[in-house]
Length: 187
View 1 (cartoon, rainbow, N blue to C red):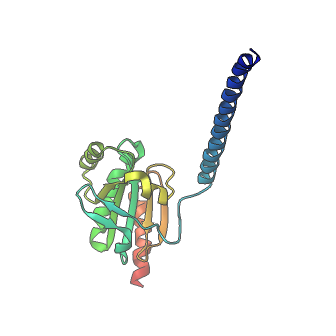
View 2 (view 1 turned 45 degrees about the vertical axis):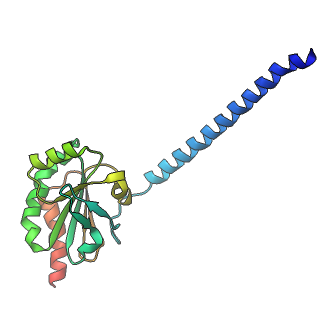
View 3 (view 1 turned 30 degrees about the vertical axis):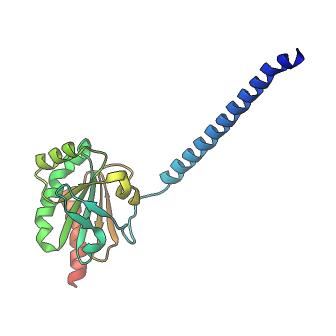
């Protein structure tokens, strides 16, 4: 009889041990996630040095690889169709692209967290003709430590980040950054 009375106590102890283990695992996972978020928060976008290399399949099915573009100035714009500042800067990006495309300057748009249909509608709406493609798995977004869209990076002819432009670039800012790089190579 005493054995029967001890049995519920054993079950309660097992259950409470499992609950304790689950709670401890949950706390540890929370600490790790919080720690990673804090460390990521202290990282900033690259503003100099080698630009992270990446490959992108454009919406047209073309392959783009940054390291294949040595000798050209490359403007990389991170954007999304749902982003209001992206809509504001889209005409300036397109106009600047049209001005520099014959001067060894290449533009590439990296679409973030969008559906293909929405991204293609955005491209059509703004008459964007430079290369654009989705960042599948946010690998490029992560490599550039993008904090939010829009963000633009100007890469020099040697593959280094020459300029980081945050949110809402205009033609004057972009032209100034590009001209400084083109003048350097003409000297």
